[in-house]
Image 1 (cartoon, rainbow, N blue to C red):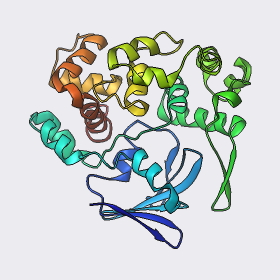
Image 2 (image 1 turned 90 degrees about the vertical axis):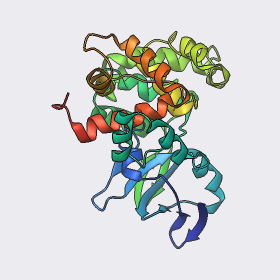
Image 3 (image 1 turned 90 degrees about the horizontal axis):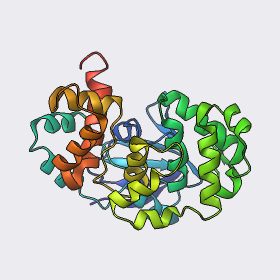
Image 4 (image 1 turned 180 degrees about the horizontal axis):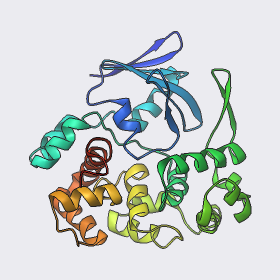
Length: 291
């Protein structure tokens, strides 16, 4: 059983299971973490800048505080039994292989507002460009955080980001998505859209509410549901998931919506976990030329 302890530069989560920082941070669910030359990851989550590195089953959070242990427990979804989930999904031979490759994936519980804006930016975009745009927005509208002699930036609140106009957001690198962000941020700030209420809806109703917002299509909505609202039966379909699903499960001419529905029907409550294992397997292992 994992436990938190202090060490000289922060805190350590001892004896974790089913936890690999590379699998977690490189499976397409987050944009504020960057791998360093020594294999550690530096990033910002919930207004905290930290460096995370792994030694066997121990996860070190340099800059972390013991009083924040519940936050990190929540963020890394530590109370969930991923061993059981993997055993259930491994009944499918394709997923068994995908899980073997990405066995340390955990689905992060991220800030809803940050995820809404970040995944609007993600539409028809590449991860390096998404990361750059999110960083630029944080630098321009977020709060400064000093860590290891450098300045990092929290993701802005709706109150702060509501000041951004289309031109300024375009300067941050969001491209054609700038009007969508301005409109959505305004609706959230004004209370026309309440993310906490949407989170309490069932998955289908929450999906409908999210897709009413500009710039949020089915894939973006499913990512928001999965990565910040704990809707684990969501099944986001991007180019990588499309390829692996068509290659292993479905005909090549099947629509994105049918792939999404097939994934939800087949994997049910565990659809979101299945999607993450398949995404990582397709992108990191098989590569773009495999399908």
